[in-house]
Image (tube, rainbow over all chains, first blue to last red):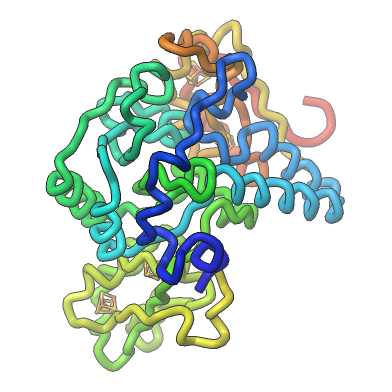
Length: 277
Length: 82
Ligand code: SF4
Ligand code: SF4
Ligand code: SF4
Ligand code: SF4
């Protein structure tokens, strides 16, 4: 069990605890004067350009104390404001049961990393009481939102998963859960900041993927699906390779393997990985 | 030592409508950032989004961003001087 489940799971995984989706946890957004630039973009918990540059400059100076303390600061902010966890598609589909209302909206990451126009960038799912007031914050919900029936939301999420997006569930003021992102490296800030700088704005999932080399035919379909740099291809044996310490347990590789060579195992059942989040 | 990436904001007017440099960079070193606070019931004027070199450790000095910019707004330099 991860800390989020211990603190907010009530005996379950935290994203299956209905209480974390409840209106009483929803915090009214502050008035414009107090809000920061980051909040406009709906990325309140992620380190923004200034903060990333500060971290890079500390690294460049070789000031490891400053680097460490910035990392700690960013992570504690993430834990308070916006913490994510990788989910498998099965977990995603189960979590949809707790979401109401549900809407499709633009991805703020790809807006600022790729300048994608709103209409080509509708990969995020927002839900919960905040959506009733979406028209108050036209910048966060730029391009408008599309309310979805839960069945349509499931269908969309399955499609995004097929396309190769890794799905991450986020709190919006922990433990209130308000968003489900479909992410990629490097266009998604959360994944980039985690892989490039080690900032834990989101955690690994509850599963870990493992390959049975005897079943692997070496077709190579799986490795390009990994958004977390956990997979490679072993040319000497002609089989795919997964580094379990880098695996985030998203399951994207599993779903394309036609020979059933990849399976997901529970992280908590593997002592050396049980606390690798 | 880090590369120095300078954007002439007077030349790059509405990067949200262009974004060529963001998409050409092989390692997505450049990002947009927004320099205005949010306002209720109002969109932010797109001119408040600016281009910035962020992931400087990932810049390979390929100069693709400099070449692609239709306004000549980007400069990339490394080392002493220039
Ligand atoms: S190895 Fe598979 S399950 Fe693990 S992070 Fe990569 S794609 Fe996801
Ligand atoms: S998809 Fe399956 S069979 Fe193909 S390389 Fe990956 S593990 Fe091997
Ligand atoms: S010089 Fe190349 S690597 Fe550096 S920011 Fe420009 S496009 Fe990216
Ligand atoms: S290519 Fe030039 S004009 Fe276009 S967004 Fe980048 S800096 Fe601005």
